[in-house]
Figure (tube, rainbow, N blue to C red):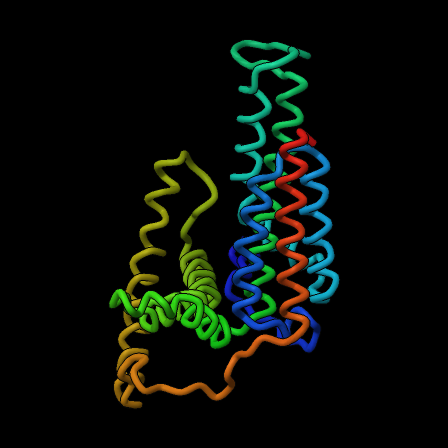
Length: 267
């Protein structure tokens, strides 16, 4: 299961999605999320899904990779779908004990599962097609106006970049620790919930120690290179908007306008 966590990984490429300005991709992600949570009916969800399919096709990221990113969240998605299925009022199709299945519940469960899946796929697509450095530069440039309010924009962007960068590393470290504990006879798959929780302690302690050690090594390395934050720092590549960035933004705004229109029409 841990090997299925792909958040923070970057797949280099030369597609138009990879070549988009990181600021454009961040803005499009926000527009996509707003459109996704604004969608209400099947037509509006279909429009958002078409936008996602188009982005995935242009990025040439394998669909299998996106499906793999959903595996760690299958339990959350299933519980959310069941709650919407059993506790949505409407025309009752079946009833047993305290549960009931309604037509509206089936529709709500389907749309909620679809919404969560599309949300995860769209978010992961951003990290798949954007390097951590480019993502940091994009965040810092977008939050640039906050510097006037003395907000540490560069430091916040750097922290988010480092967090994304070390997710695959910590996942790999956790997998190694689990394998080592299993080799010593540890059992993580049997027993009740309390027993499984106690069995995680031999994993959490060395994992926290390893994380703090890596953080200390990273801080030392940054100090040795005379890192002093964003003051006076320059970039090797200056992000700049091109024609395809404006076209992508126009497409995103068109999607949002279309979804809002469909919601007002009840579609």
